[in-house]
Image (cartoon, rainbow, N blue to C red):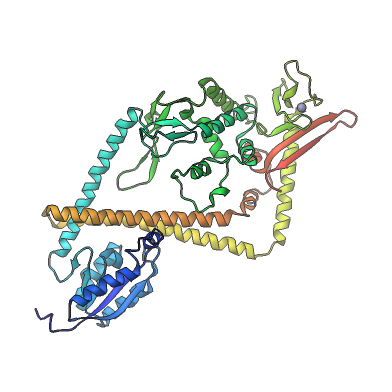
Length: 532
Ligand SMILES: [Zn+2]
């Protein structure tokens, strides 16, 4: 070994990744470029024959290695023998892609006589056996994870069967007991909002109308409420919290969740396997439902009434097979009560609900034929659509271009995410194959432990990256949607031939039906659109 005599030209490769940025925000910059550089230079200084030749630094924020100009320059310089040593903080800084590691570190670098050293994972291509042990250890980690994952699963299952809450998030209306992480207790403020929602539904309002009502009175939606209370949220969003509002889905979820009568239903979802984290919805019969695990907010009678009404409101008419389009939408222009449906042998009608059971309060007594109203509404929606297309012709093209840019951005982010997901499974499979092909269990406890730590770090990094990408995607989706949401609704439809519930929901907030003018045989019908 004549290392001490021969001068060795060292190139350091630095990579700033998204996870570093995140850590910077938390004032932990141990991973930052500056520290990477210091760490590597300190190492170089320990060896008098090491000379720093060049620094290569990528801001590969995605971490997927799709665009790394400095990496390419490094490879070119290696090929031209400008360097003897490539020095990195860790192998994963060099690349997370097993194929690239294999191609360069284990092949080309040998061919070009380049030595690769990474500090935190003790990799050094000059030391024999280094490669194998790292590969073995990666695989052992995989088995370790599999075991852990199975153990966690069975522990969760038995908890669920005992009626213990396993989610760290409480459904709206409840909070997690400070004395017992597995138990729900009532949140006295949110509880009132839940009750209000059930009551509003039973007075005839639909999901959308309830959401609008709550937003109008500035009642915070679940995520805003939790945020205001300082509770950790189970969603990632770049949207300012104050802008998150009640929506149809949130209302529907609350109106159908048995948690409010004191039952806990868990185990609805599972992941495909410990390797594949895709969520799979289980069959309803496999859900774990335990009754009376916590205090109810809604009594069972009210809950059942609501479930019954939900079915009724969306139940197809026996004769026509058509779902009632206007339930929760049609109101009396005179008195504001909802329009009730009634049937005769020939036709279906809507009539002001204020006029039944001996009450005689409303002037709007004559019913309106259902099919007549449906035709009127259909005509009105078609007018809107037509008008939209006329206006759109006139709009400038710039906004369309903008639209496309967001779409492209989202598309590339989705591709990036798939890429990372593939890499996660590829890395694991790769190690498994190598192991099965070449070696048979030679590993020390220390190696085992070290590599579990490394492996978990990598896994965490990947997950962080995916999280960040998801954030970015939702950010662009929001941008894309804002101001264009209505346009999208229109674009789904050309001219409508007939009405359906979905269309009515998308276009119409409320329809007000006035009383019949008997002289002219006409009545005032006003449509309140979801947008202008
Ligand atoms: Zn009325």
